[in-house]
Image (cartoon, rainbow, N blue to C red; front, side, top):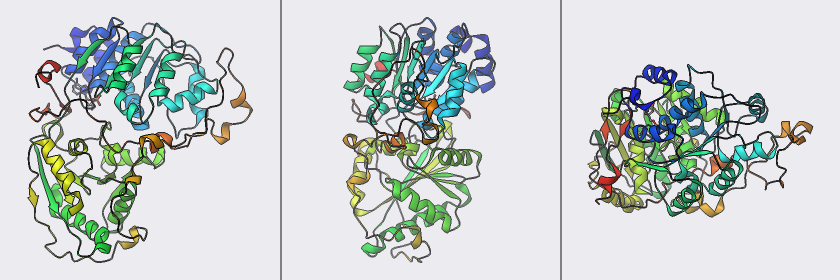
Length: 494
Ligand code: AMP
């Protein structure tokens, strides 16, 4: 088996990796690091949980160790689809670069331009950004991309889902042709294939299979639920959720509760809080500082229940949770796999329970078909009739019961207008002074402040290939995620 010491990484990087407690490189790391270190482009087909972040951060740190940052000209660029992912890459960078003098800046929405400008002015080695925010900085003349030697595109399929591909293409064209590109995507949709054919040069292609099945160490169940009266459905469903949680008792140390709609995430969190549960919501419409605070609280155990939309199901490195509750049956079967994959990580056991209303039965059948098993039916802990007190009814705005509305989901072709390019406090003279040699561009269309957040996909990108049911999730000890070790070659035998 390959060892980190075989990989030709900077000794300072090796020391940081040893501190992190990693024993050996994961398959994506073992495959991506050697070509990256010799300057080759890399096409990594891998999803979160495979160790792909270190797969590009470690060689970047090693390569960048041999030079110095120049004002306003970052030497490398990492593009991520969401603020959370960008923040996680930044954290990874801090971990692995702690014995070096390399500097970084994180350019994400929800953080003041001024602070970010200061860092860029001083010169940074690594710029980690969401595409919209990066272009905003560029257009304000605060940033030059002509010094970028290494460019990383992380979670490209998610960028596609969120409508960021034109931005990515533009950014590619603003960086030097001679740059090295490290490109990661969980799937290879035709559009992604096109981008890689256009912008990558003879890449080393490394693929690790994705989790198409639910881990065997996750115990699953579903409670079939029918409201006593239609107009009481929401109240009764929340009461049922509380009963399910209560039934788990102390075994439920912490849990993620997934809802299909952002509005329900808020309502369920509020209702739980009102009933004495330590719960907070997280979804793309909340402001960045609140999302960060909530995630930190959940990580350090001060928050026990995280009510989440699917943004939390992908990408976020949330530590092990004992339980995942699906308040709704996800409307895309693969979301189920991702959601419940938040528990039972790293070889631990986990438990997941879902509430299924009659109209969700079709979606439940699709999940069972995908995972190749029936999800065991559990007894309704409240019995046949649901005795519900109205103690949480004001958690929800008064509304008629309704079928799940399609319009609750952001549609691809309804990508919201994006945020204004300069935040009001900074739109004064300073923002108007272009840096010499910075390209002058036509103003971009108005942007909505929460565009990146609002563009949060509610579903997985469509998979190019049929899902395998016989893949195995392999836990690798306490600090390791579950890795999918099957090779591309094995998969191609489908
Ligand atoms: P990623 O796929 O980059 O989001 O990584 C998922 C998790 O794997 C993170 O918590 C990393 O800290 C962890 N990780 C990365 N590389 C290794 C490794 N070689 N051994 C064990 N854990 C790792």
